Every structure is written in C-alpha cells, then in structure tokens.
Length: 362
Ligand code: DAH
Image (cartoon, rainbow, N blue to C red; front, side, top):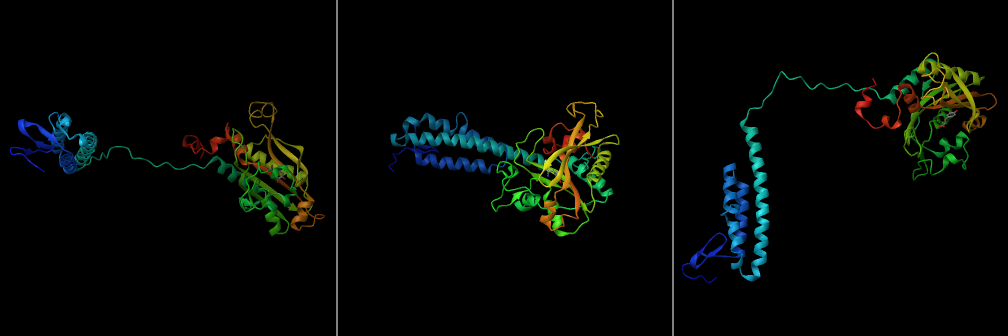
C-alpha cells in the first residue's frame, strides 16, 4: 500500500493531509474485533463505560466513520456502512448484558446473604384425596360390608370381553367407531367395567361377589356432564337363587350409606344386552327428598345405575350352567355420584387439577 509522507494510521483508516481520515474496510474490521473483545473482557462498570465512549460516544470512532463515509472507496462504501451499523447494535447489546452481569456479580459477592429467622416458614400442605377416589373408596367399603371383594381388569380390552361375551352382537351400535376408541391391534379402551365380570367368571366358580371400580373410555365430546374418560363401579353377585329383590336390597343399602338414610330406591324397566330382565335404578333426590328441585331436575329422582339379572347367555359364555346359576349385576358412574354428593356442577372440574377446587375435599 502506498503511503505518502506525513500520513498516519488511525483506528478506522488513514489520516491524510489536513487531518482528514480515509476510512477503509480492512482497518474497520480490525477495530470491530477489538471493540467487541474489549467489551467482553471489561472487568468493571467503569471499564465498560470507557469502551462505550471510545466506540459509540459522541466523539467516538463510529460517529467518525459515519462522518467520513464519503471518503471510503466507492466499492467499499456500502459494506463499511453496513459493518459500522451492525457493530453499533452488537456492541450496545453486549455492553448492556455485561453491565447486568457485573451488577449481579456485585450484589452476590459483596453483600452478605440476609436470612431473616423471624419470618414464618413455607409450610408444605398435606395433599387431599380426589373426590373420585373418595367415592370409589367409600363405595368399595359399603359393598365390602355386604361381602363384596374388589376385582380389577385391564383398561385395554378385547372386543370379546367388552362386547361379545356380554351378549353384545357385532352389529350393535355401541361398537361404532364413533363411540369407541379402537387400537391398531384390534383391541379397544374398555367402554364399561362390565368386561371384568367376564374375566372374573372365566377364572372362578360361583359363588362370586365382586365390585370392580375403574376407568372407562368413550368417544364423547366433553361438556358439563360428559367426559371421554370416566369411572364406573361394577357389581356382580352370582350364586343359586339370587333374585331381583336381592339386587334391590343391595342397592338400597348402598343408597342409604352413600346418600343418607332417607334415600329411597326405585327400578324402571330398561334394556341391557347382558341382563334379563334389565332395570335402571334411581335414588330419590337427597336434596329435596323427592319433592322436585334443581338437582333432580324437578322429577324427585336421580338416575344412578344400570342393573339386572345376568342373562343366561352370559353364563353359557363363561361355562357356568345357565339352568342352576342365577345372579345380578349393576354398573354405575362414579363421577355422577361424586357430582350429586358434593354438589359439583361440571364434570370438567374433576379433571382440571385446580388446587383451589381439590383442596375442598379431604
Ligand atoms: N355397562 C353399562 C353401561 O356402561 C352399565 C350396566 C348396566 C352394568 C347393567 C351392569 C348391568 O352390570 O347389569 O351403561
């Protein structure tokens, strides 16, 4: 590079006659690197401020570059402008973050930690039982007093256990893809706890007296009273000479224990594929005593369970003698009982894990 006598290099270019500075890209790049390096290694707030003044201050190097842009070789001018601008932004941001860093370091290292022993501690709250668990535990305890033990089955069921063995034919609408969660292997998420009846009867001989609480799944659109995932408790009593009166007695006892001593039970004829005869079981409204109110929607009764006498075809499927064996079965929704018992207006509250709601139960 040809240098005329009397010229001198500066941080951004070359000073020529008359104090004029010729800015060039090469020198500017070096200056940029230096500036960023100085900002990175500055060890105090004062040192950072000095870097800022050198490069960005009113009389600093970058304003100088901008002023001398016209002196830059035309082919380098655009690039020099771009580099100077991006450097200004980068350096400003770097200075800002280093300043934060140095301040933080200052307070952590220079001030002794303050620990006020007189402040109240952060107590850890005891958890509470979920209302669904509470109803399950209570229902199991009530049926336990009548001699029922607990049996459980898988959430992923075979169509055989969920439908066929329960006398629910292949064309039954309950099997619809719209209603049921099917898995790729041909199994499904059980739509009811009733398949556990089959599993239990397949594995033992009468007498059988079991309740089975658990999760069920249906392709329901969620609203205030529906959830695609919900819970049921199923009951099955199989022996000889079991009658509908026994079923009613058991459900009446359950109603009194769960809802209060004055609650009455009624049966309405209904249809389920796996019971004959089938009934729906209502409890008289525990809020209004049967007069009609908001909870029972004016009817005085609340529908609680599906039930009936086990269909002889189900006994045949599990290898029991349909002539000499009799039994009853029932199934009820846990959420429904929880909502009625605790006055919960929306099923979704049970699944939102909102501690303000859940802490009300214990
Ligand atoms: N599984 C039925 C349902 O989900 C309820 C039910 C009805 C269960 C009658 C039973 C029964 O055991 O006998 O709608």
